[in-house]
Image (tube, rainbow, N blue to C red):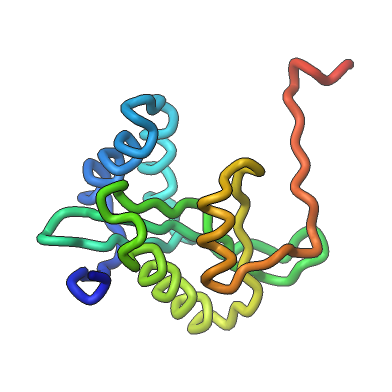
Length: 150
């Protein structure tokens, strides 16, 4: 089915389709801040992204950016969002989107690509491993400010 899709550069016009995909994945529970963050990401100049169109409708999307140098890394590519509509999961859309963003990073001279996923997102872990990701030299750390003592 992946050969029946068209990959195009992401644009603000695709926001409604992107939001619809996220809404379907989250079973309708999405925040206003998530919707606003997608638009903000797409307005940034250092962000790259692509949509997968099936019959003219957004079936998946990927957003990435080049960061660095920082935290001991030279410039690196980061995948910050990747989703396919539940009706199209497992059809090759995610792989086609990753291949496209990898091509972009290669053209920009970027060799190291990173992403972060929730520890319990086994399906996403399996997907990223299937397209070549593995553990990195980094440990993802986080805190909640309400839990930090002053």
